[in-house]
Amino acid sequence: MNGENGIWPLLLFWVTPGILSQVPQASEYDYVSFQPDLGRQYQSGRFYSRPAQCLEIPQDMTLCHGVGYNKMVLPNLLDSETMAEVKYQASSWVPLLSKKCHPSTQVFLCSLFAPLCLDRPVYPCRRLCESVRDACEPVMQYFGFHWPEMLRCEQYPTEEDVCIAVHLPNATQAPRSRKTEVCPQCDSEIKADSLYEHMCASDFALKVSIREVRKENGDRKLLLRKEKALKKGPIQKKDWAELVLYLKNGANCPCHQLDQLKGQFLVLGPKAKAQHLLTAIHKWDKTNREFNRFMRKVKKSKCPIPLTAPH
Image 1 (cartoon, one colour):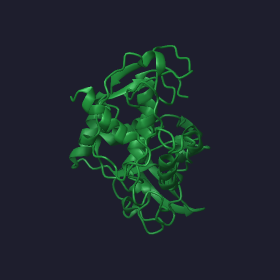
Image 2 (tube, rainbow, N blue to C red):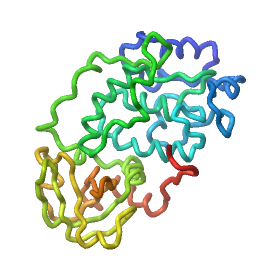
Image 3 (cartoon, rainbow, N blue to C red):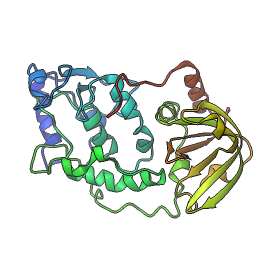
């Protein structure tokens, strides 16, 4: 680890407005050591039940482990006070990260979920938030969701202030049309750790056989023949007989997994407005090493449960 004299110039280069022209690689980040006054200054007028702490980013916090620095401060910039709460909330963003909708998605999210240990909070710049939002919200809408109020970009500072500003040459370009692209729900390779995080963030995870696929109001409806729950969440016993899964906005985009309905599938998703939404679908493939790793992890591990209710 470098000494503080070598780290501070790097940190100032990273957060000074308008300096960055490209996303730094992980090796270009560094950790600024714990400041003696952190507990006193960091709260910035807020009141918490615990003093501020500088902690290692856990290996099982997939969203931010490996982001480019090793330690984070609690409470974080979303007012989460415990690591269990942070991991639970961060896990719900792992599926979006895997879609690679913007090169700075991880930097933006981790600046809030796992902020650097500094003697004062440093928020993402408003422009960074807007560029990530504009690129990623169309992908979120495919899953039936919108950009959340808690990440409202207007609350973050402009680049006249000290903030995290990662600029890309094409950061403000409009997202490409997805009419001929693969449905986002069907566009992810199997990686055991990410798939497990996705399952933990989902309301349900099922092994299913598909009887029929219909198109309706811009969506695809999956009518099931047989189901087995890895995680059944809010699905009631009365729902099993007529369970329907919805591929939101998926009527006109390719989903290669659904080209052939033979065999079985792993499906994940939430329940929203009385509909069971599909956010990922994979062939149930026991010849795939990563799929087998995922299944072993399902059997041996338990998804994190927050010690306090999410905000």
